[in-house]
Length: 102
Image (tube, rainbow, N blue to C red; front, side, top):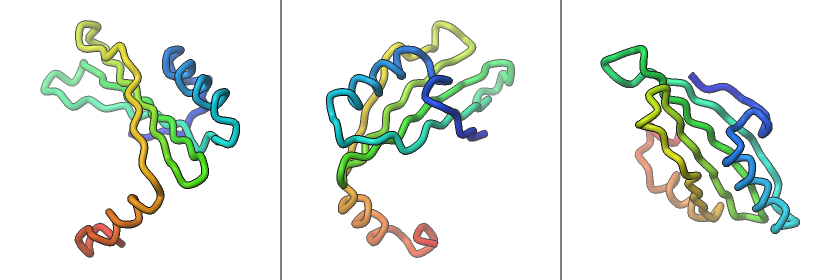
């Protein structure tokens, strides 16, 4: 289930990564912060929570991501960062199947 949240609701390491980027890139803006809660395993007591923060700087989008799990040994301890130009996103959508474009 997806939930719109505030950056302050994200884990501290994710907040630090995003704030560091926003402070070092004056024109960057925070677009959204989201939380996804899932139970993807056979054992439905194991809860996987993914936090994503979307930013934009000009035509460059960055997504900061951190996943946590109720089963401690499965936790990710790092923030992943992926970026893409708006033109690349437009190209992906134009190349994708028709059902994806609607």
